[in-house]
Image (cartoon, rainbow, N blue to C red; front, side):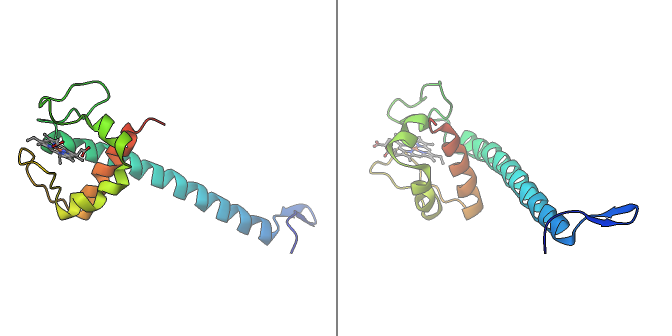
Length: 124
Ligand code: HEC
């Protein structure tokens, strides 16, 4: 099956292979758009979660300083280890070697959102 227009009298019918290819390309394209949109949603949701749960100690933005001096700003944390490596800790409960930081346990979906947000802080 070749990918070119077939001449059918005065009508130009599109080769079925061509339209099949186009359909695949179009759906891949839509998939990419959909996943980048949902990623933007994740980042926004993750930001809300860290605002609510972490920002009273950690600086969560690109410039702010941590309200609690000992708590490292998230933009520094993400340069020390990749945000994905926190996934397990977020779900199992973050327990660092100190008792100032409360133990958090997030659902997998929330953890993914927090990671998406932290990932957005990683200098590219
Ligand atoms: C009550 C204050 C407080 C809150 C709230 C808090 N943290 Fe912390 N966090 C700290 C402190 C203090 C440290 C530094 C611990 C140390 O180095 O001993 C820390 C360390 C960390 C570290 C480890 C950094 C490293 O380099 O080892 C991560 C990751 C972290 N916090 C994530 C979070 C996340 C995610 C949240 C919100 C869900 C959060 N923290 C909420 C106080 C807090």
